[in-house]
Image (cartoon, rainbow, N blue to C red; front, side):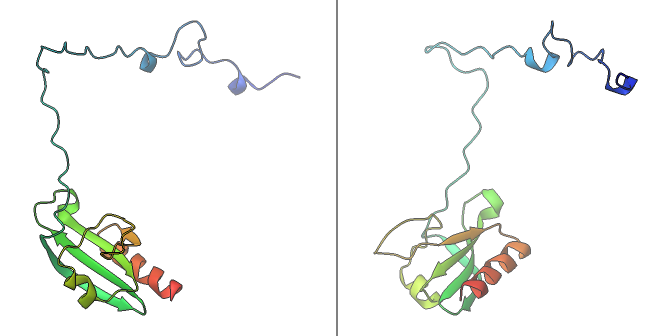
Length: 135
């Protein structure tokens, strides 16, 4: 009976077992010697937010959860805006600690976010909805 012709072997280079596809023929980039400076400057790293330099853009208390949107000064990714969720915390308690670090941590000294969301309107809605579900 046989297979229809469209199931037959292809003449494509991807199906040829004798030669590797062209995308696999990438040569490694030369590595500079220790005394040799790199030919291209390395990209600048994204700046980490300074926990003491921020503006509160928005906040909402949902039961025992607090949703906040902060803009960190000098932070470059997402223009420094972060949407975070805190448990067992009010805005007054969060602001009282002066420094608000957006990174997750297990600390008894300061409140740490339990979740972060993309800093958009959709991210804000997801954060608030999560708190409503968990309440």
